[in-house]
Image (cartoon, rainbow, N blue to C red; front, side, top):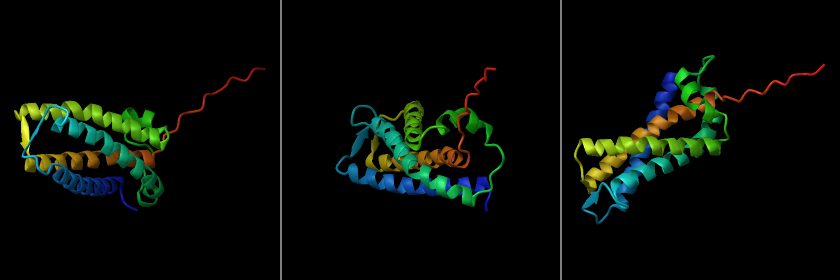
Length: 172
């Protein structure tokens, strides 16, 4: 059995690196013939990154949640209580079915990624990317995103928070 910290690190690295390579390959293939990609607009990098964030997190969650629910408990030494940040941020998601968890995580990813990616492009005064810059930035973005989203997924598998039953008052 390994510690939760080492398990999370390994799972995050595997997910992040594999998604960076896969999405970088797709980005290279799909951007063929385009020398410069604009940041804004329907075909812009910003719209692409946000759509990728939502789709990536949704699909990754649908795949990884059941796998982690099967395998994580066998591989990890679990403490009595999950981390406080998990309880505060994700406990309302953890009580749902896997498909709802995946959808909620995907919506969070899109809502959180939009201002962050937009501010990064503004901070660096970027109005467009070359094909190579696009592929590298998309690989970095998807790798970091995939690595980060694995953490709440693993915690949801290890600590299946359930809603508490409502106590009924017996009448005498």
